Image (cartoon, rainbow, N blue to C red):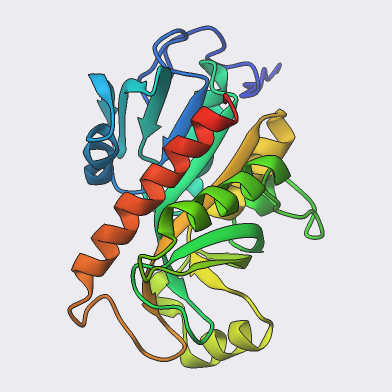
Length: 256
């Protein structure tokens, strides 16, 4: 009996993608990646000539213009599995640079809701990237994008009371399994913040030869107990909008 196994590395090349519903030519070379599809329209508020390209599953995609540059926004959904799928398929339709814009829990003293968090690398506490690379393979963003995100963030937040933090983040799989002991351990390691998607974004981007970075708004401080469930949602929304503007400015200045 002959078995012909499917080679997923070649599935869908040059075609409309199965999960995100996008075909080559329908998006820009740069994509902003929020997790939540409801935050894609928040990105669209900064754009002109906005078109909804596709909306399948958790992946909503809109494209528009910002300061003369075409920009795409696609939601990844929550977690590394759906993020990896979105990035893989966006690469297949022509995206060459990614900037994740999301929310993240602070792990160090002084991080307050609405502050901006730029990742310089991600601790891979997820299962998805284990399928892609050896345990010691680092999840690191593009250095040029990361440096520009930090520079632009500091410029745009000067005098606003918003602080820009940068350092190592961690991508967890299980939101409700994050115990006080785990949070304390991450704090002691000097990890800046925790979220759920960056490690997959960084690893897949490196393996596919494209660029990626991340800037998040702090939703809470898990170390000192400041939670998004305690009336700070307005600060978080302001942080989201600032992070989006920083990402857009970075895309324009680097001509991504």
